[in-house]
Image (cartoon, rainbow, N blue to C red):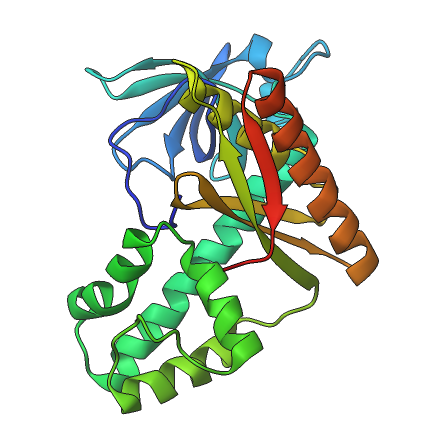
Length: 263
């Protein structure tokens, strides 16, 4: 999902970033960063598997943390949260996603400041075309760094193209090896879409500490699989592991899968 797609409501099992607003004896109230206007409550029993004597040994006001959603109440815009049920790799992936979104937003803000183009127009020129293609803007920026050019489908004036390339190189520093390929996943059973979603969710969990995996749709049945790791060897291994995980799950459900060169 693109960074700027705004969902109306969080879903059960989703991992979100929240800021602790108030701590009470039996839990804490949390403001959801991902969903402005939504409030969460985490009961003391969902903070840790260990016996807790003082919640402030684990959480404090103003702390930004990663939580998992247990229940939702759309009418009141409230959710129940858990900290202890967040897996290590889920937490790391979410933190990486947050940092990337912040970098992307900084590039867009600077582009607006230095070109005099309003932020609403920047969104129409850059964000919306990326969203329409089902891509992550951060991934597009990485492609810009690697190719030193703007994709042709981004219809920008020459001076804006030059400034965007300059800002992307300035604000996004590549410290890891990034690899990408297309992943073809098909499942024609009645609940095939759910099987593919589950396969992708499981594939995303394979990333280890400091590694990153993203799978975005290019239009069913083709998905863009991108991985980042410290070395090229590990990046190739991670790419293979994620693809095999997704493909095996889909095949078990009567579908097919294949990893191919990016088109």
